[in-house]
Length: 355
View 1 (cartoon, rainbow, N blue to C red):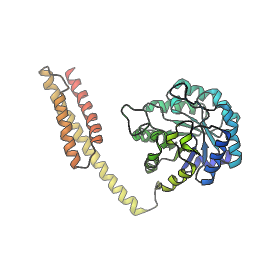
View 2 (cartoon, rainbow, N blue to C red):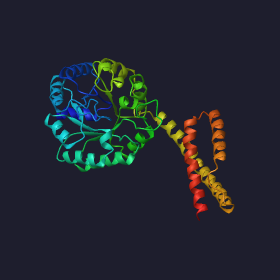
View 3 (cartoon, helix red, strand yellow):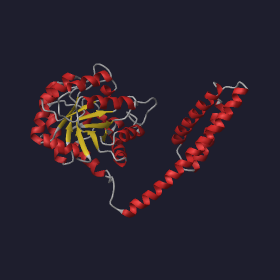
View 4 (cartoon, rainbow, N blue to C red):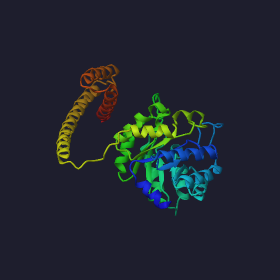
């Protein structure tokens, strides 16, 4: 089985699926068999211990569910994966031959918990996947990776499951793709898997998020699957049947990382050089803008005027919206861009006022 796990770990795209929670032995076995019958799932996942926001919710079947996974693996030949949050859970999972472990978002956010798990992994040869923390903090995610790596774990992968954010309505957890992309940039050798189930929180938009992840060259997907999703004991709305999962995977347009085509590479390089030139010009213009902002800051200092002028800022933003709409730029992008420019301008003016 170890050789098979190693083979699966290297496969792209890697597909992991299974129920949010292991509920009964029959449910686990039927899910495993039906997932295996699709011929598309590499590793079966199941929640054994479920950290919940409030007490009284179903918090997982516990250790007694691990033999069910062991039996499912024996019948189907699929490696199995579970989430662990404590040293005892690591020990129990390994005792029952769980092949892949993952550290959940609620654990990643707490360095003490991550360290406890890492200490329990010392001397163990097992692949570990690490989910992003609930809050959008890249350093916490990186810290979790470093702690597990220092414990001697060689095979570490990343799971992007979205982030909690104020005012988010479309998703259960906002994707914040830029954070996942930055994490991948910093760790190019690590596998990055997308978790549409926890990003979406509902099954009707799973395919859209999965497709975007593949378009961004993610290495695989982890999607929750249940034999009767509407009756699932946890996270019912975001789960799909094994058969629906297979249909979704068939619907995805799988992108190549590269092609051996000289004409393609020559054209791409030409366009990239244009991007480089435009970026250089943009940096020059931004630098000039900040020099103007500094002059404004000097006038404000000389006349004892506050830095922030709300009416002027609203005027700038509305003007940008109007022009951006004609150029095909979204208001969301313009808002983020000008917010960043505005804060940099304020910082420059602040230095002038306090010099």
